[in-house]
Length: 352
Picture 1 (spheres, rainbow, N blue to C red):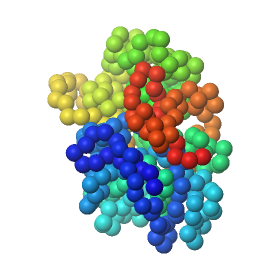
Picture 2: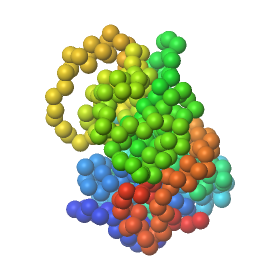
Picture 3: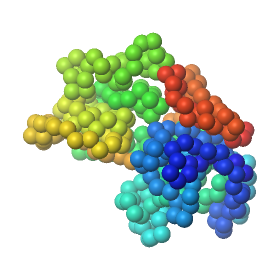
């Protein structure tokens, strides 16, 4: 069967031919429909993030997927059911986080991640996985189901933010998203109904399709070349909630400056190493004296996937059509990894 993988010492994806997997007891055989591509895939290709499966000279890519159950193999799922797979799997050690259905909180060494670190991904015609790592979605969401995974990460981050403010009545009026890529836009669309006023910061100049989407969502676009993150309170207003989705290391510290009293910032982006100078004392004082919070979030669990399924169903049709810009067949897979100003979200269609 066809699969898209990266080989050791290589930085470009390749189309390879491998045997179709057979499900073990308790596993399901899934026929892949679509697989999305995001920044993590490019990090895997460059070698800056993730690791190859043990004993393998290639890594099958892809962690954002939707498929259809080809063989239920005696599980409770039905053949023909549309499903989305989660990403993390237990490593060869026991883990209380997996036992508690909280794999997203497991520390490094206790998990592998499909398509990212230590396990093959979903960018193949078929894949197998234990039933417990699949979330069913309505057939009406089959075409866009691969977006459940990134949305689930936002659901988890928002849950953490809300719980960190749970000791008082949190006024979540102004929300800011740092980054106008696919994850940033998915986050902004979620906040449209959860914040009275929303903002999105990016580096693009007009005319640009992402700016059009931001404004269609009723949000204010902030060009970071004109207004830095720490200047936003003076130019616009202090923020109650900031989602960092760029992986730009300085944003973690600028987020503290952008927050108003009692605000919370959530970091989703993963930066490269970068040494720079910050006024640590001033930031520390703001966190303490203004009850600000700054937290990191990565991955998600089945609970968040189920919420993401519901959120995806609520997105406007025009929004989903606008961000899904680049559909490629398996034979055209290389085009899905090409970046251009008009590209927002690329995905590969394996079957219908």
